[in-house]
Image (cartoon, rainbow, N blue to C red):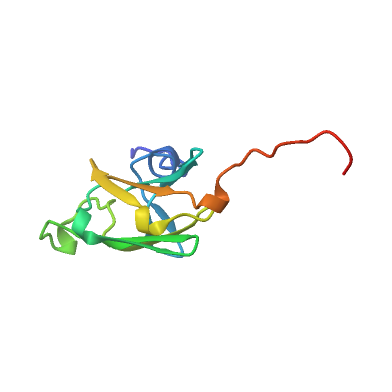
Length: 140
């Protein structure tokens, strides 16, 4: 008598969708890197997860408040398609556009790439920084 295999359709959700090392897939098979954006009083900081990618294969552009990170995840192995038993890693080009919450000074941006993490720091434009407003007592 044969054996039954239980089907678990949601088995890979935890492993792929919610893993900090996973890529997201939108619009079919398009690779979309995972991103964190936070701000301090003076800066906007963007961290992009790019495991397996070389810094020279990444392009970063800033147009107004739109940050674009694009590039290509290249295969380093020469394996024929028929030889694969499992193939879960994706290869190809990626693109991620992020709308920054405030205007920044793009010409003063700093970028570092270490252990598969691209970290971009943008100083906020002066008009975007919080300011104290003095309140005077008296007639308006």
